[in-house]
Image 1 (cartoon, rainbow over the protein chains, first blue to last red):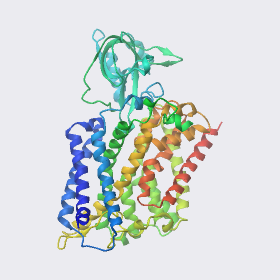
Image 2 (image 1 turned 90 degrees about the horizontal axis):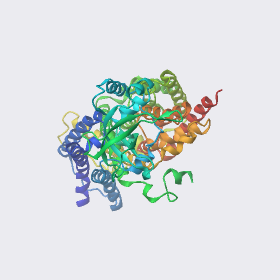
Image 3 (image 1 turned 135 degrees about the vertical axis):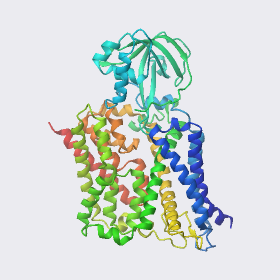
Length: 250
Length: 324
């Protein structure tokens, strides 16, 4: 009897749970760490539709009549199937951190295996705007702006030596190579890709991997074996809060 | 040893093994991204169930299976669908009488030949010979799809499909419904002009495929988080191993066909054949799709599809790679 009631309410419970998790993820702002802006509204629509479907299900369908067709093990298998839909999504919503750890970031190619996507016209336009800004002022830049500039010799020539202000995540790689990186998200966090610049100069401090840092310094574009690695020669460095959008979207 | 290194297993420091919180983050992101599209597919499937009689669809289709395969490839171009959204619709079409070979060819073609995927390929490779990349991606995808389509028409439905996909009949014990855990008993007098049937179809299809999305997302999250991509870098330009590396990366990253070009375009260590192998193999099958396909097809068939799709992709890209 109880198993039959559970079987009846399970679809509504699962759909409501998914909708609740989706709505909570949106309301808490955690969605910014999971999906690019384009996909966030789809989640909201899906959550509303799932709530509606749950209500419609309860309104349009009733508990099944007792049937001898299913053995207790069959009923358990059915309930196990619903549990598999319920438990992972709730566990993931509770356990998923705000960002990837440094070990995953390194595995995704923190070093020079990736280059700034050349299709990103908005990024290139932004990089040009940064280069054309008042050279007497400290230029607020993103990590990606410096990478875009590093791929254009004419922009390097104009921008090399400029004072910049940049925010990003720290990666020390055992102290041998200091990097400031941002994760670029195309669709969702699963496809996020780190893009990094090097830090040199006055980097003194007990910085931890994946810590958000606010850096002011001089933009440099040294070339090693024909590959330009953008670098900031640090004047000042301090911890800062996670920005409103922790991932950058192209 | 390669896989031990790839996943930083015992030989590497413990701190660099699989980070389970990262797996949770990746898993959560994949299911949140895929679920809305799966729901959209289930809604379209529900509409097909209620408003499209089986006879109408049959009348639209060519009589010969071979022509049906070509029609399915054309439909993949005209009616683009993402991988997640296609599954419920394809299952519904099969239950409405569309030959499984034709429906399956459409299922494979919709993401692979998707015009949006070609457009994203153009954007991604805009400064890296975009038209060559589009021609190679489209041409190789079409060739692999034709090969798979002609293999599919030789198979009987019972060799391809799970029993519940063939019948879809709500038997009393629901053992053969697309979601065996779902027992739908209509409330008498509450049909509301097809609303009851539509709601039941949507819930059955959505929850039925959702389970496989959850399993596939879990597998994809573990592999895409734990796999060290830099290990593929040294072989990315190899004539033989390059295409293999591209195929392997596509299997573990499990990207959508409209996104994959942006990721691989920025992957410097890969040659063009390796990138093309990545772009052709990924939309056809990967770790996530393997589980999604298992929602409708028999495991043995999915294994056969996997091997054939990857082997054909490898052969084509290898031939291209070996040209002087």
